[in-house]
Length: 244
Image 1: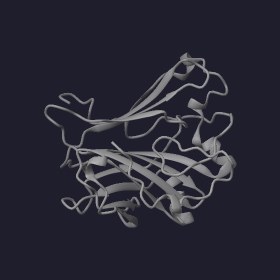
Image 2: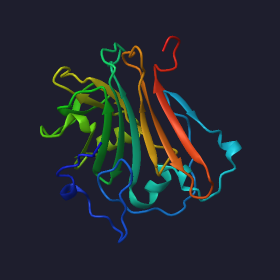
Image 3: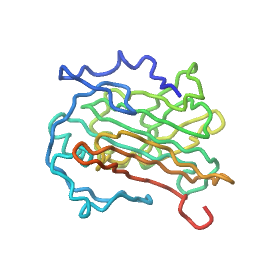
């Protein structure tokens, strides 16, 4: 379906380069990056996480598909984050089969985000909270956004230094609030996008026949600039458990 990014163009920061590009899953243009030294890529926590073994890939030094957003942020204060959103706050009591995939870009004090979702009615708000559950920011979703689009975009302006520290420390949670679930129907921790910088393709993974409440996943794929290869990362919650 089409991507609904209304009223975002005027809110986007002005790129500092003449050839800014619009990356997949983003609502604002950003500057292309050159080859940088790769940073360590520790595994994601609290997720079933899979990727190709780096020792077996023999990937070239300047393959952009394995650049770390942490390394890129040293040049332009830009960092990428992702989140997998499923039903059930802590402690885990799932009430919905909805799944969402969120992508975030921190540009100085601006946090841009795009969220795609499935099996979810039209969200009313995007909520950011700290580990204690205190609401830090809410982004209202436009009422004229068609629910069949399955995607929304937004921006958190002037994020405070304290909240940026929570974000970089992977302490922030994001929730999609619906009319049926005012406390948030799907939730997830925001994690650093450590491996794939240029995401060429993406997918939301859902359970089928019957739908499992609280189970879901996301896939991030990229084509190598150097090799004729497709690299991917899968993040899942509840899909690979017995009976799923």
